[in-house]
Structure formats: structure tokens, C-alpha cells
Length: 562
Ligand SMILES: Cc1cc2nc3c(=O)[nH]c(=O)nc-3n(C[C@H](O)[C@H](O)[C@H](O)COP(=O)(O)OP(=O)(O)OC[C@H]3O[C@@H](n4cnc5c(N)ncnc54)[C@H](O)[C@@H]3O)c2cc1C
Image 1 (cartoon, rainbow, N blue to C red):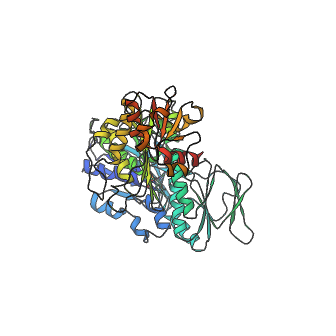
Image 2: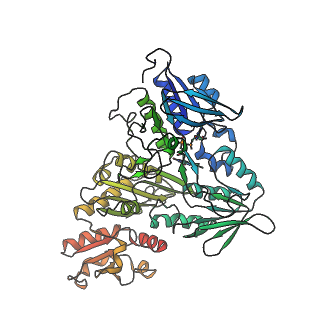
Image 3: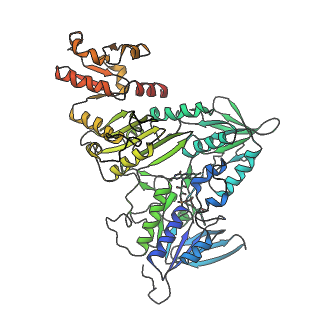
């Protein structure tokens, strides 16, 4: 788009929605064009606020509401000459005339405004299903600053809460409500918390939540709400349980705000979001869409997705601005949206849980079985330096060429750093061999000379090379292999896989005659390391060997999630 219209006059960019995607689009548009008029319209009372911080404001960690305002309308006006108008609802688009109908909610007046380029950054709305009692007082969603204000007021008088939905926002709310002294129950329809994770990884999170007093009702839908005798509510869970709650938080997901786009005849996708191209342009050449309202391609599975995350929203806002202002689409990341990989992190009661790329579940949904998985449980830093804690990791990669497909990790320290490294590797099309070779920061208090990321690459690459053939725990039930537990006798006595014989690694060389050669041997130890050493030894002696990945630690995680 040129700064000048053909017949003269300044070009006009109108952006609907002024939070993550819209605000970043507006600011970048100004950096790219000094001669354009830019208007940012939002029906809410604030623009550019940090909704990611809202749970922590409810919990009191972020004490002052003002802290959540990343930029004010005044700052946009004074610094960027952007016309920001809050409490302005865009009610309709006329794509042929290139105008929008804007309702000024304060003055209750409606006017029609022209645009040369229109950006829909209308975000998503929290889902409120039409359940019996859904409109009773005390049932909240958390999306905006006024939502947080209402919840904070209700929490003052409350002693119990039910959080419906065990996703990232639901669990962040659970933690913050516990911090506020409430007895909290989380009700989740799936059989696990954090449904984007694979169940055995989510088990660590469930354990931590329970340890901090959060009651979990997993695999339980909510059927309705009713007033409780003496005040408050009851949440009616499937199976007939009535859970008492002074406050209910609905955190069961969001749906894209597509009403404007739909009415304007823009193409929507199969997941209900606005369809856009790599420059974030919709089916109308003068309209772009960014943020939670659009559908995006999953870079690993190629599937269309809704991915309501702040990072993609910000990047898309920048890309739309570049596209509107005529920056040619190149490989340069600021002009072409590459897709999403669902990199996410959450902190819960001192535990960090992070993921990037595909999960085993999402690969299965995409019909893929051409991948392998490894589990490992390295320390966050070397064991000789005080304070190391385990990082439970799972990495998924393609069987054919070792290309990394996804990773998940849970632990108390250093988790997000490892997942960020893998996230970047996925973005660059990297393989497990790249992880093996990655040169990463090391000093004793931060990591190890073989960082957990390197170890993940080594385990996976050794598997692909045949040096460490792995067996999946899910294969255990049907196997005819001889299970061999190579831990010390005392560890074996504390618990072992049924059918496993105990041959400690240190005694393996003198016990070779006791091991069958007509069957595969499946080795198990605590986390996989000793079983690897045993595998190499046994392979040199002609045995057919596989290792149960992640050892008894992963066995326990699978058993807990079953
Ligand atoms: C509680 C919470 C915690 C979160 N935590 C994280 C996190 O830790 N990490 C992370 O990556 N993501 C997090 N997210 C998600 C992240 O905040 C969103 O992905 C991001 O805000 C999306 O930005 P957006 O601009 O697309 O949409 P939104 O933030 O939804 O903004 C859309 C705006 O458009 C306005 N609007 C809609 N329709 C109209 C209309 N017709 N006229 C005028 N204005 C309109 C709305 O009022 C709204 O202000 C969290 C979200 C919430 C709610």
C-alpha cells in the first residue's frame, strides 16, 4: 500500500481490536509508514493490556492493576501518532465500499469510517456453554481486566472455588486461588490435566497439584450449576457429584471472534477461525486478520489449528503491517508467517511444564505412526553442584531421518530453556543429530557438559543408529521378550516390572550364560542410563537387546496416567 491514495490524501489503516495482535500491528505499521493514518479501535475499556498476567493479578502476585497496562491510548497517540479509541465497537464491514460501521459506546453514536486496509484483530472469547445455571452469580471467565476485577472482588468473600477446565489458564487460576487461601477443585473432561501434553507427562503436574491441596476431578464433565443452601453454588459434575463453590472459574477454552468476518463474507476455515495466507491476508485483498481470530498451519503436522497464544499473535501483527505497507514477502520472518508449533510454558507450584511441536496424541490424530519417542530424566545441572533437580523429558522424532517433531518437559528448574532450544531446532528443520551436537551454555550451576538437550539427541540418535534399540512401554503387555532389570538388588526389591529378572549391571559380564539367546532381552533400570551401558555390553556378546525408554521413572509415569 502506498502512503498516498492515487487521487491524493493519506492512506488509512483501521485495526479492530487493540490487544496483542492489533497493538503490535499498529505500532509496526507506524514504524513502516509515517504518512499513513492509523486508527486502533477496541470495544473494551483498555488496549494493549497483559491478559497473560491476569491470573497473577487475581492471586495478588501482580498487586497493581495498572501494571497490566503495557501501553495506554495516550502513549500510542503521543509516541506513534496512532488514533486509539477504546469503547468503540466495530459493528459491520462493507467490503465493497471499504468502510466500517463504528458504534461509540460512550456517546452511543454510530458512524461510518473508510479504510484502505482493514485489520481484524478481534481475538477470541471465552467459551460459556449453555449449561443449566450458567448465568448464576459467582460464575466467571477470565479474559479482560474487568473480568479480573470481578473475580478479585468475589474471592475476597470466598473460601472455595471450582475451576472448570484443566488447561493452562485453568491451572494457573487454580494455583492463584490456592495462594488466596481458597479450597480449589479442578474439573476436567479429559482424563488428564493439560490436555495438550501426553498423559504420562501430565501425570507429574497432577501429582504436584494434589500435593498442594488442589482436588482433581478428571474425566468428568460439568452438567450444570445450582444455588447452594446458605449461599454460594454447587457445580454438578458428571456422575452425580455436587461440588460446593463460592466462586466458579470457567476455563474451558476460547472461540475465535469471527462475527464481523463472517458477516462480511470472509472465508472461514474448518476450525472456525478466519483463513489467511502467509501474509495474514484474508479472502478480501483489502482485509488482513491476525491473532487468536485466525486459523494457522501447524508446522509439524500441516493441520489447520487454532493456537491462541501471545507470541504468534504479536508476530502476525508485525507481518500484517509489513504486508499492508508493501514489504515484499521473502524468507525474512517479518514478512511471512511460518505457522505455529504450539510452544507453551506454565508454572505451577514451583513446577515448570513446557512443550513445543507435536505431542504423541497430535501425531496420532494426524494419522502418523512414522515416529519414535525417547524419555529421559537428566538433572537440571550437574549432580555435584547443590540443588540439581530432575527434568522429565520426552522427545518425538521422525524414524526416517531423525527430524524433531516435538518435545515436552516437566521439572523445577531449567525446563523452559531446554524446550526453547528444541523449539528453535524444530523451526530450523533440525534433527536429533543436531541436538546431539548443539553447543549450549555450561557451568556447574546451569547445566552439564552434556546438557539435557544433548542427552536427548544422543539417546534418540543412538536409537536410530542401532546402538540403543528402544522399546515403548506400550509394547510391554504383548511382548515375549525376557525382561532384565539391571539395577542393584535393593532397587529391584523396592519394585520392578512383573516378569523381570534382576541382573545388576556390575554383575552382567559374569552372568551372560544365564541369559536366553533365543529371545530378545528388554532391559530396564532407573532412568535408562545403566540399561544403555548393559545394551552395548550385551550387543557385543551377540544378544538381541532393547531398552525400555526412561526406565522405571517413565514406567511409573505411564502407570500413574493409565
Ligand atoms: C488469562 C489469560 C492468560 C494467558 N496467558 C498466556 C500465556 O501465558 N502465554 C501466551 O502465549 N498466551 C497467553 N494467553 C493468550 C494470549 O493472551 C492471547 O493469545 C492474545 O491475547 C491474543 O491476542 P489478540 O490480540 O489476538 O486477541 P485479544 O487479546 O482477545 O484481543 C482482542 C480485542 O479485540 C476487541 N474486539 C473484538 N471484537 C471487536 C469489535 N467488533 N470491535 C472492537 N473491538 C473488538 C476485544 O475487545 C479485545 O480487546 C492468555 C490469555 C488469557 C485470557
